[in-house]
Image (cartoon, rainbow, N blue to C red; front, side, top):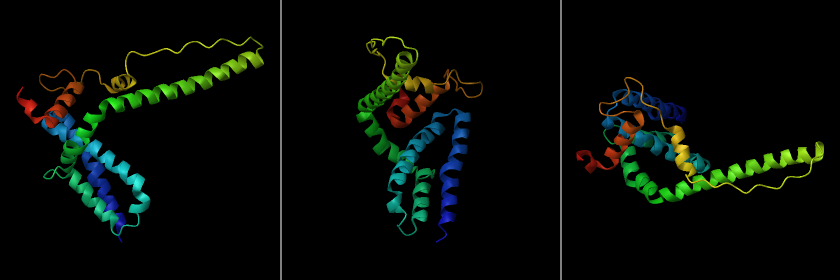
Length: 194
Protein backbone atom coordinates (compact mmCIF):
# COMPACT_ATOMS: atom_id res chain seq x y z
CA UNK A 1 0.00 0.00 0.00
CA UNK A 2 1.25 3.47 -0.87
CA UNK A 3 4.18 1.88 -2.66
CA UNK A 4 4.20 4.75 -5.15
CA UNK A 5 5.26 7.11 -2.33
CA UNK A 6 8.21 4.86 -1.52
CA UNK A 7 9.08 4.65 -5.23
CA UNK A 8 9.13 8.45 -5.54
CA UNK A 9 11.27 8.78 -2.40
CA UNK A 10 13.60 6.07 -3.71
CA UNK A 11 14.05 7.92 -7.01
CA UNK A 12 14.76 11.21 -5.26
CA UNK A 13 17.20 9.75 -2.73
CA UNK A 14 19.00 7.26 -4.96
CA UNK A 15 19.08 9.11 -8.30
CA UNK A 16 18.37 12.83 -8.06
CA UNK A 17 20.31 13.58 -4.88
CA UNK A 18 23.38 11.55 -5.97
CA UNK A 19 23.40 13.31 -9.35
CA UNK A 20 23.59 16.68 -7.63
CA UNK A 21 26.08 15.43 -5.02
CA UNK A 22 28.29 14.02 -7.80
CA UNK A 23 28.12 17.35 -9.60
CA UNK A 24 29.17 19.17 -6.44
CA UNK A 25 31.98 16.67 -5.80
CA UNK A 26 33.29 17.14 -9.34
CA UNK A 27 33.27 20.90 -8.87
CA UNK A 28 35.35 20.71 -5.69
CA UNK A 29 37.85 18.29 -7.26
CA UNK A 30 38.53 16.86 -3.79
CA UNK A 31 39.30 13.12 -3.89
CA UNK A 32 37.64 12.69 -0.49
CA UNK A 33 34.38 13.99 -2.01
CA UNK A 34 34.74 12.19 -5.34
CA UNK A 35 35.61 8.70 -4.13
CA UNK A 36 32.31 7.87 -2.38
CA UNK A 37 30.35 8.78 -5.52
CA UNK A 38 32.70 6.77 -7.72
CA UNK A 39 31.85 3.81 -5.49
CA UNK A 40 28.14 4.64 -5.20
CA UNK A 41 27.27 4.51 -8.91
CA UNK A 42 28.68 1.02 -9.63
CA UNK A 43 27.08 -0.27 -6.43
CA UNK A 44 23.70 1.20 -7.37
CA UNK A 45 24.05 -0.12 -10.93
CA UNK A 46 24.74 -3.61 -9.65
CA UNK A 47 21.78 -3.42 -7.25
CA UNK A 48 19.47 -2.26 -10.06
CA UNK A 49 20.75 -5.02 -12.35
CA UNK A 50 20.02 -7.72 -9.76
CA UNK A 51 16.66 -6.15 -8.94
CA UNK A 52 15.62 -6.04 -12.60
CA UNK A 53 16.41 -9.74 -12.99
CA UNK A 54 14.52 -10.73 -9.82
CA UNK A 55 11.64 -8.28 -10.06
CA UNK A 56 9.11 -10.98 -10.98
CA UNK A 57 9.76 -12.47 -7.51
CA UNK A 58 10.31 -9.22 -5.59
CA UNK A 59 7.00 -7.86 -6.87
CA UNK A 60 5.20 -10.30 -4.57
CA UNK A 61 7.17 -9.40 -1.43
CA UNK A 62 4.93 -7.35 0.89
CA UNK A 63 6.10 -3.75 1.33
CA UNK A 64 8.93 -4.30 -1.14
CA UNK A 65 8.83 -0.64 -2.19
CA UNK A 66 9.52 0.38 1.42
CA UNK A 67 12.22 -2.27 1.85
CA UNK A 68 13.80 -1.02 -1.38
CA UNK A 69 13.69 2.56 -0.08
CA UNK A 70 15.52 1.42 3.06
CA UNK A 71 18.19 -0.33 1.01
CA UNK A 72 18.68 2.72 -1.20
CA UNK A 73 18.89 4.99 1.85
CA UNK A 74 21.57 2.68 3.27
CA UNK A 75 23.54 2.97 0.03
CA UNK A 76 23.38 6.77 -0.12
CA UNK A 77 23.38 7.81 3.56
CA UNK A 78 26.55 9.74 4.40
CA UNK A 79 26.89 8.31 7.91
CA UNK A 80 26.53 4.65 6.92
CA UNK A 81 28.16 4.88 3.47
CA UNK A 82 26.69 1.52 2.59
CA UNK A 83 27.77 1.80 -1.02
CA UNK A 84 31.38 2.42 0.03
CA UNK A 85 31.31 -0.63 2.29
CA UNK A 86 29.73 -2.86 -0.37
CA UNK A 87 32.14 -1.59 -3.03
CA UNK A 88 35.26 -2.12 -0.89
CA UNK A 89 34.22 -5.46 0.57
CA UNK A 90 32.62 -7.14 -2.45
CA UNK A 91 32.74 -5.30 -5.77
CA UNK A 92 36.37 -4.13 -5.80
CA UNK A 93 37.85 -7.51 -4.76
CA UNK A 94 35.68 -9.30 -7.33
CA UNK A 95 36.68 -6.91 -10.14
CA UNK A 96 40.33 -7.03 -9.13
CA UNK A 97 40.34 -10.83 -9.12
CA UNK A 98 38.50 -11.17 -12.44
CA UNK A 99 39.84 -8.12 -14.28
CA UNK A 100 41.71 -10.11 -16.94
CA UNK A 101 38.75 -12.39 -17.63
CA UNK A 102 36.43 -9.38 -17.92
CA UNK A 103 38.87 -7.62 -20.27
CA UNK A 104 39.12 -10.79 -22.35
CA UNK A 105 35.33 -11.21 -22.42
CA UNK A 106 34.83 -7.60 -23.57
CA UNK A 107 37.53 -7.94 -26.21
CA UNK A 108 36.24 -11.32 -27.44
CA UNK A 109 32.66 -10.08 -27.51
CA UNK A 110 33.66 -7.04 -29.52
CA UNK A 111 35.70 -9.10 -31.96
CA UNK A 112 32.87 -11.61 -32.44
CA UNK A 113 30.26 -8.87 -32.93
CA UNK A 114 32.53 -7.00 -35.32
CA UNK A 115 33.31 -10.18 -37.25
CA UNK A 116 29.62 -11.10 -37.47
CA UNK A 117 28.68 -7.60 -38.63
CA UNK A 118 31.50 -7.45 -41.15
CA UNK A 119 30.60 -10.92 -42.40
CA UNK A 120 27.03 -9.82 -43.10
CA UNK A 121 28.22 -6.65 -44.85
CA UNK A 122 30.80 -8.54 -46.92
CA UNK A 123 28.25 -11.17 -47.94
CA UNK A 124 25.83 -8.41 -48.93
CA UNK A 125 28.45 -6.63 -51.01
CA UNK A 126 29.58 -9.90 -52.56
CA UNK A 127 25.98 -10.80 -53.41
CA UNK A 128 25.47 -7.43 -55.12
CA UNK A 129 28.78 -7.76 -56.99
CA UNK A 130 28.13 -11.29 -58.22
CA UNK A 131 24.34 -11.41 -58.68
CA UNK A 132 23.55 -7.86 -59.77
CA UNK A 133 26.76 -6.55 -61.33
CA UNK A 134 27.82 -9.93 -62.75
CA UNK A 135 31.42 -9.72 -61.49
CA UNK A 136 33.42 -12.80 -60.48
CA UNK A 137 33.50 -13.71 -56.75
CA UNK A 138 36.42 -12.39 -54.65
CA UNK A 139 38.74 -14.46 -52.50
CA UNK A 140 38.33 -13.74 -48.76
CA UNK A 141 41.16 -11.80 -47.10
CA UNK A 142 42.86 -13.10 -43.92
CA UNK A 143 41.64 -11.62 -40.60
CA UNK A 144 43.69 -8.87 -38.96
CA UNK A 145 44.91 -9.17 -35.38
CA UNK A 146 45.04 -6.43 -32.75
CA UNK A 147 47.93 -5.82 -30.39
CA UNK A 148 45.89 -3.68 -27.98
CA UNK A 149 42.92 -5.22 -26.18
CA UNK A 150 39.53 -3.86 -27.05
CA UNK A 151 38.72 -3.06 -23.43
CA UNK A 152 41.78 -0.77 -23.28
CA UNK A 153 40.68 0.84 -26.54
CA UNK A 154 37.11 1.15 -25.23
CA UNK A 155 38.24 2.80 -21.99
CA UNK A 156 40.32 5.30 -24.00
CA UNK A 157 37.07 6.41 -25.66
CA UNK A 158 35.77 7.47 -22.24
CA UNK A 159 38.95 9.35 -21.30
CA UNK A 160 38.47 13.09 -21.10
CA UNK A 161 40.89 15.63 -22.53
CA UNK A 162 42.49 18.04 -20.09
CA UNK A 163 40.01 19.16 -17.47
CA UNK A 164 38.30 22.44 -18.14
CA UNK A 165 39.15 25.46 -16.05
CA UNK A 166 37.66 25.15 -12.58
CA UNK A 167 37.61 21.36 -12.60
CA UNK A 168 41.32 20.64 -12.31
CA UNK A 169 42.74 20.20 -8.83
CA UNK A 170 46.03 21.71 -7.78
CA UNK A 171 48.79 19.38 -8.91
CA UNK A 172 46.49 17.47 -11.24
CA UNK A 173 46.55 18.04 -14.98
CA UNK A 174 43.23 16.47 -15.91
CA UNK A 175 39.96 15.18 -14.53
CA UNK A 176 40.78 11.57 -15.34
CA UNK A 177 43.90 11.54 -13.16
CA UNK A 178 41.95 13.28 -10.39
CA UNK A 179 39.23 10.61 -10.48
CA UNK A 180 41.87 7.89 -10.59
CA UNK A 181 43.61 9.34 -7.52
CA UNK A 182 40.31 9.60 -5.68
CA UNK A 183 39.41 5.99 -6.36
CA UNK A 184 42.91 4.79 -5.56
CA UNK A 185 43.00 6.69 -2.25
CA UNK A 186 39.61 5.39 -1.21
CA UNK A 187 40.34 1.82 -2.25
CA UNK A 188 43.87 1.75 -0.84
CA UNK A 189 43.82 4.09 2.21
CA UNK A 190 47.51 3.40 2.97
CA UNK A 191 48.46 4.87 -0.42
CA UNK A 192 47.56 8.40 0.73
CA UNK A 193 50.88 8.92 2.44
CA UNK A 194 53.01 7.94 -0.51
